[in-house]
Length: 134
Image (cartoon, rainbow, N blue to C red; front, side, top):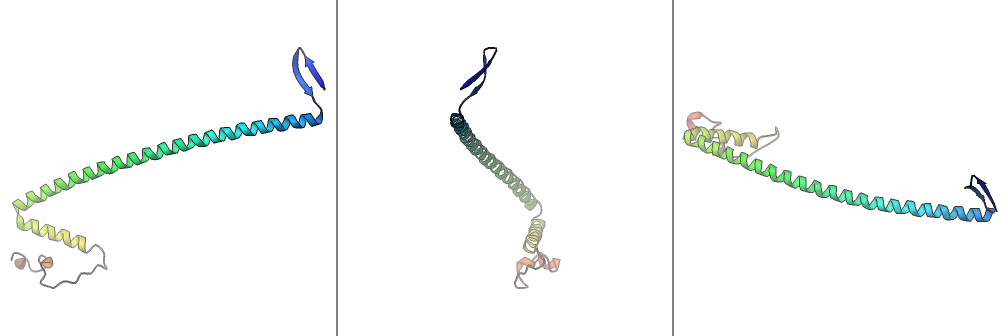
């Protein structure tokens, strides 16, 4: 075994080949152990971050849904108030408007079909306007 020294600092140690290989294997094993430990720690942190992000996502979606439902309820309430006011002013026009809305929603697609009697009240505003007032 030789030790090279320069200015009282250890620069190099020459060991027999078998010992050097053993030392390098131990060093490599230690480095692998440290690397695996760091990977494991990183994976755990990653899971924590993902879990927190998923929880935040669920909270945000729930709050958004609640706010959307509240807004829709407010809109429905205003629409009902508007319809009620219209009905009080002109009940015949309101009935006509609701029938037009029903036609629009019933026949959205070209292929929609409905089988009714020709005398059905559903068609009352599509017939002669004088008949509609009956």
